[in-house]
Length: 181
Image (cartoon, rainbow, N blue to C red; front, side, top):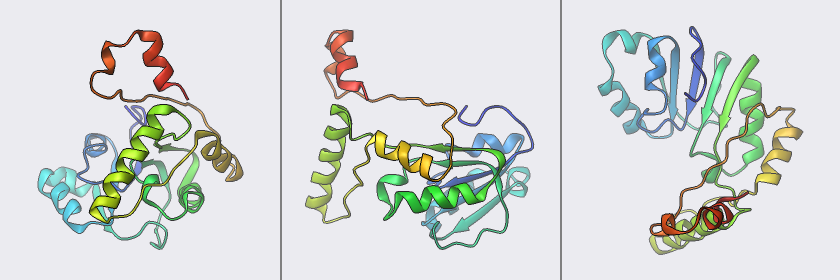
């Protein structure tokens, strides 16, 4: 699991969407679901049973301006950094909301490798057609520097990249070439 199997933790899921990443943590923990979209929070509420609802909070708002009333043992920020105005501001706020010895899980699309560049190009191309906002271009080295500047220590680093359709037929060496950081 993303945050391990510890019990009794307070968890914040930033940009929780439909809650799929953190609903299962409600068995042994308390989860605050945070999202810009009230309708996404309603989807989560409709999935939960009464006992799970008692261990949940649903917060609708903007992460950088919301005044939180507690700190967390774990914060999940997946699928968010590509959409924010300031990655550093999000990292700093997450750092301030974290209990001592807490954990933050960040996810980025690394624009330092070929697959990351292709994904960012594709989504930004679609964004221009649909007249929506462009995704942030995040290089792993720059993100790691941001974490370091915010005095956050990387305890574990997992890198993976999806291959485009048909690329699974390439040799393992070529697949790794496209996926490397």
